[in-house]
Image 1: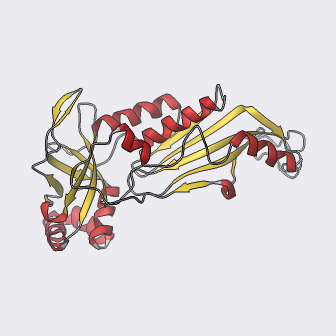
Image 2: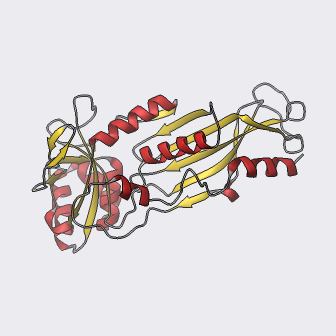
Length: 300
């Protein structure tokens, strides 16, 4: 038996494609904090029972059902229950009854609660095991601090708008482990002949000395499933080859650690979402236009 896969994997995608994928995940997402003693697995699926129905614009829904862990979900189970991950994967593939016995046994011995991040299946969802409610994409501590990809993207776009960046170039990668968004502004450029004096494009043979233009930008990285901290890092893009250069010394990093959450289905209000991370697009940690001008002027 294999783990489930999330279909919304993107590589070097444009903004519209990324936004649609994140919106689809957002509408299907279910977050549940549950004590270990109330969890069990059956044939490799996590069994969710007895949750309160949720009322939304789409009607009344329930989180109850079977959820198949993704590879990232199984990694979380292994880490939290202290089961070697290679052994857990082998049991799932070769002896699912042994998987059930091990996971259920260690859940019964745990006095902790865990945050399960899940996606419900729908008519358009692919690669989800037939007959289940969806996938369990993360198995995390109940004090995990949620910073969702969709909220990060909206905040970044709002920040760009407030900074007066009209037509940024945006490309993104999205997996079940991490989102990376690269932003470039052709409106914010500078000559950097000293920085590029010894640079030669491996593609065209052009030299940086003859083409010393660099553009401003930044890179955002985030994980909803325990795959790393939220970071925003300034980035230069070289005109002659479009290679990116990240400046990690000016990066902002925010770890996913918060207060312990109550048991039950987590209903994120807009106020709560606003408090889950501290970066405000109206007050970015480093005003990137000003810092960009200062930094490139020193290198001329």
